[in-house]
Length: 167
Image 1 (cartoon, rainbow, N blue to C red):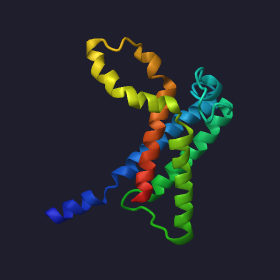
Image 2 (image 1 turned 30 degrees about the horizontal axis):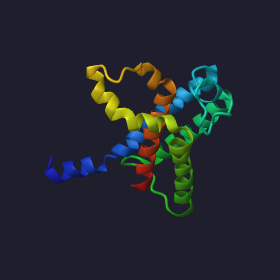
Image 3 (image 1 turned 90 degrees about the horizontal axis):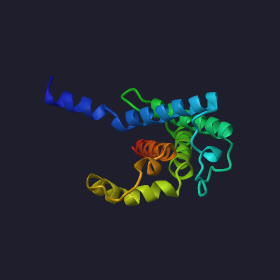
């Protein structure tokens, strides 16, 4: 194998697309499980400190089903447009993919997260650097909750989808 062939193969790998498929697919599976079982959905009435979230009034059954549908749509778009054998449509089909994909990005980046994730990111250097010294004296399980973890995964998935759509 020559160096040119190897670099072509490496260049043809779409790591952002693959990561976006994994992130949106994994989050979609978790959300589907929450929708099917009615348990584990961390938003809305299931979140006791949910004062500032945009989705605080959405019932868990409805919210989980809607979020699962959006994530499955994003995953299918990423699956169709990622990789060496990806579909590269033009015109109206491309516009439909972009509108749908960026709609999912808006939900994952701006609707699901709330101010608590931003506050955690702001305080993260202090929490990480102070942890070995026992400072600050906080219960980390009260800071990094299931809701915050879901929000972090949602933002990560949204960023991966956005990067893939731009490329």
